[in-house]
Image 1 (cartoon, helix red, strand yellow):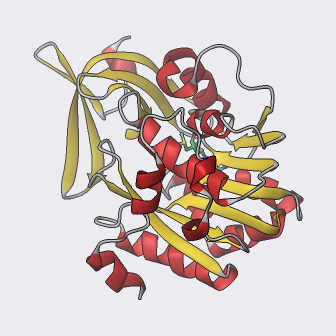
Image 2 (tube, helix red, strand yellow; image 1 turned 180 degrees about the vertical axis):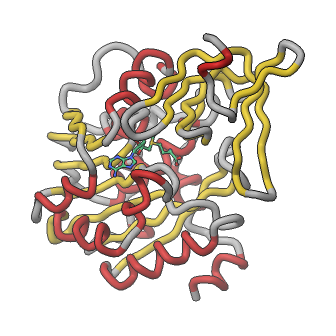
Amino acid sequence: MQNKELPDFFSKKENEFWMTEDERGTMKLNYRLKNIISAKHSQYQHVAIVDSYDFGRCLVLDGIIQTTALDGCIYNEMISHVPLVTHPNPQNVLVIGGGDCGAANEVSKYDEPQSIDMVEIDAVVVEECRKHLPEVAGQGDMDKRVNILYKDGLVHVKEKTDHYDIAIIDSSDPVGPATKLFEKEFYTDVSRCLKEDGLMVCQSESPVFYRDIMLKTFNTLKELFPIVRLYLAVVPSYPGGLWSFTLASKKYDPLNADLTRLCKHTKYINQGVFKGSFNLPNFMREYIE
Ligand code: SAM
């Protein structure tokens, strides 16, 4: 790949490839790369698959790491198995975003879902991950229950009422096409597209560096759902490591879930991790109490 084709977050210094993730004005993270496997401008964003020394292959959107071969399993298991086990009979599952296919693959490990709609805005993300990131996207054909719809998640949830048991919002950070996926209007539509005992989960950013986004998500969902729980995992490739997820439910509480239903074919989550992920550190308890 010619250097001149590459955006500024890639650089070559003395025959070494580097990627600089511009987290914010005061914090930039540098990753040494073995190779840039592919780099494309889609209609929505810059989509790259890189091979890094420390995380293996990574999906990078607009210069921000989304998922990696090393730790993609942590994020994808936590955003998928927790809602799948909390709902006792999840038949219709919606994944919004999730173009790396990791969440849809985790949902597919359960027998109960009859359909898994994955609504991803950007076909290029799915194509590139399926081609170059099998550690996350899987190999061979996807489970027959997965229907990939290339459309805006905002539009999709406006079109459905009383339809899904679970909605998993696996979005990128709240910039670009994902901005509106963090707003009250969207969560209101998600609530309407869920059945009367449905539940949703979203990634709600870093409790360390983006407390404002996490709390806004938590407080907004509290206005819309009777049960709202924050839970945590450590995802080393996300700035700050500690990552929050928010589960909002009309009926079922993850604290009362039947953990014997938890799938055993996982790398990260088990019954102890599931339970422990809801034990929040004091600084987070103070934020939400
Ligand atoms: N695990 C990741 C994280 O926390 O950074 C998210 C991964 S996933 C690749 C995020 C996906 O959301 C991207 O592929 C992006 O194209 C998609 N996306 C962003 N906005 C969207 C929208 N409005 N509707 C549907 N998909 C969207």
